Length: 218
Ligand SMILES: C[S@@+](CC[C@H](N)C(=O)[O-])C[C@H]1O[C@@H](n2cnc3c(N)ncnc32)[C@H](O)[C@@H]1O
Image 1 (cartoon, helix red, strand yellow):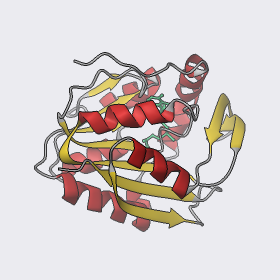
Image 2: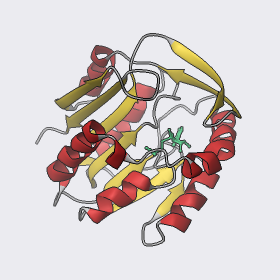
Image 3: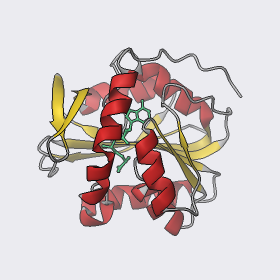
């Protein structure tokens, strides 16, 4: 194990409690099912094809494990972690054949060069901007050479303070919007090479979406 050098966000407890509160609705509303969104599914299928055979895959911020299970069904050795214990309860109930654990992206002690793939799939946009570079560096170091990281996040400028989400549930979190060039620069600074970029101006989520895939060079 390597010691984590990632700063812990001051609002981590509030974000965890918020996702615990919305977790039941998130499952009830069947959110996160990429099979209903062909462009997101295409990006995920490209990721799956790129990391197959490279080693275990970790879904960071897996929520109720919908995408984790999707990748498992495509033959990947994939497990999930999430900040929210309630999300992980759902993941374990819905996908008992998969491994899930409660953990923050900022608190993972990842083995160096051990993972074929990592997902930050709609799960890094709550991280304070200054924390993101060290999280991406920790991901880059955990990938095997040739391993891939896939990110989905909200695209734009500035931050959105959310006080309710997923059916009017009270939450307290900040959604940090990213321009593709900003986030790509962080991936490159972390030592990764850009592989793919998908911009979705009409994401269906009210805010444009961005998918980025990056690879640890051989
Ligand atoms: C919009 S949901 C996406 C869940 C899942 N990736 C999906 O696509 O269905 C955001 C998830 O990120 C998790 N999350 C937020 N901050 C996190 C952090 N610092 N570490 C790990 N997970 C986090 C939340 O608990 C929540 O389950």
